[in-house]
Length: 181
Image (cartoon, rainbow, N blue to C red; front, side, top):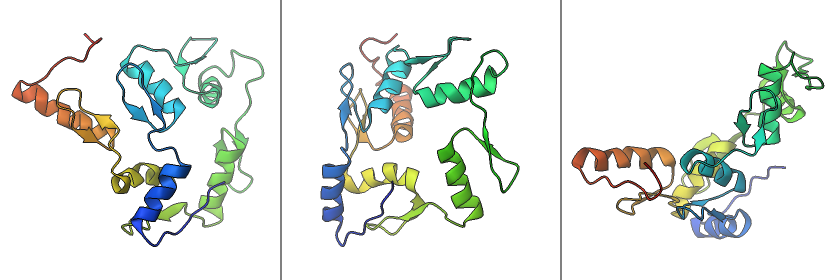
């Protein structure tokens, strides 16, 4: 269940987020980057350190980060090859179908009941999706969990870090990370 709380001051919001939402909750033992959730760490290790995604497709062997993603993969690519693959759930109000009851409920709330899923940041007043708010709040908390391995500069998202790394490549200060080719 999602709750929206109002805070009079940014410092109170920061205290709440640090206490209740485990900002920087898990750390990669290989490169020391801090991520908020365990599933993000699993994907990080698979992409950057040659780790494997834990949920394997029995038909093609592709790895997925969760059983839900594997189920959706099976529905899309192997429906005729495997028995007992759950069907997509149809919306009773329109022709769309969905991979889960939760996805159907979000669709109905958003598209048929007028619920937008938008959140207003109490610190700066920006309006955004609840999903993006999880990233946006790092700005106000000063969380910079994406760190340049060359110079140590921190960023609150991966995209600005990737842009920053291009600067090192262009100006000749690039250094390979330990354990990479």
